[in-house]
Length: 66
Figure 1: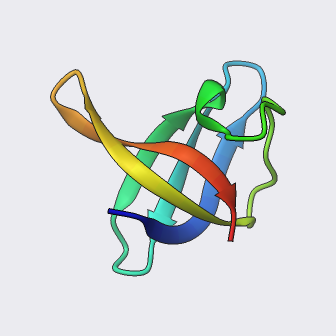
Figure 2: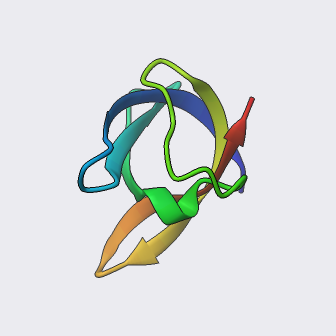
Figure 3: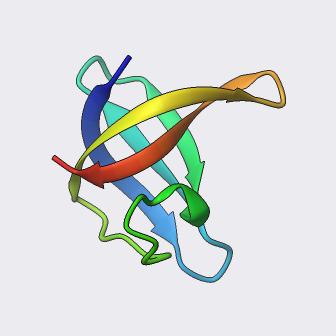
C-alpha cells in the first residue's frame, strides 16, 4: 500500500529521518530508502512511500517526491 506524507525530521550525519502520514502516524526511515539514491532529503518535503516491517516495527521505504 502506498502512503503520502511529509518529512518531519532528517539527520544527515546519521542518515535517519521520520515521515508523518496524513493520519499523523510517524514512520522512521534510513537514507538508503530514498528512491532516487540521493542520501538526503529536505524537512518539509512531500513524499510518497511504502512501508516495510523491520525489527518488528513499520518503517517507511521507497520514498519519492509526491
